[in-house]
Image (cartoon, rainbow, N blue to C red):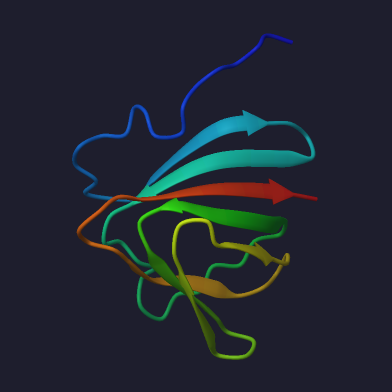
Amino acid sequence: MEQKVGNLFEGISGQVPEEVFETLLETGNFHIERIVSKGQSTLQGTWLCQKQDEWVVLLSGAATLSFAQDASKLDMKPGDYVQIPANCKHRVEWTDPNVKTVWLAIHYK
């Protein structure tokens, strides 16, 4: 396997008109991606629901997630992480419109 080297904060466009998803590593059992947001949120009335578990850490910026099962909201700042079980309905309520919000998401079985 070839060695891959990079920086999670390099190569981010100055403008982020829509959320950017970039796969960093993928195998049969897991998928690691960088997500960059700037003011984006999940479309009103829409819930995200994945077949795999997901672990997400916020590296920069700020965001608010909400979860359908208990109507809870989670305000996130750099360093905060959350494990989202498979089939858990959730949504991004808000991301900071003034700075880039950079997430690292790991999807796994």
